[in-house]
Length: 92
Picture 1 (tube, one colour):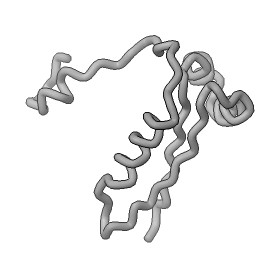
Picture 2 (picture 1 turned 60 degrees about the vertical axis):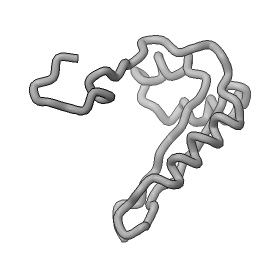
Picture 3 (picture 1 turned 90 degrees about the horizontal axis):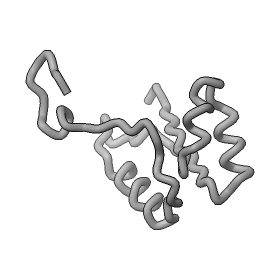
Picture 4 (picture 1 turned 135 degrees about the vertical axis):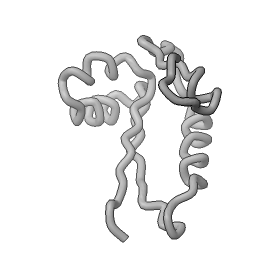
């Protein structure tokens, strides 16, 4: 990426896909993602977040979560193997 100011190489070299892999995301992989989120630092150790997860293998949950997105985002998100919604409490 052409950055205006110096940034860490991991940020500079990040890649954003236009397409999603068609392979399923396993329950173990989802668990690892959520475990990393659980251990992420937060102000005063509040961890003010929750997650709603739907895998394509769970069609009812996947469609319910997909329906929360604006139509323009539904177009690309419907092809993802996993939808993950992050919800944060904004007050202590």
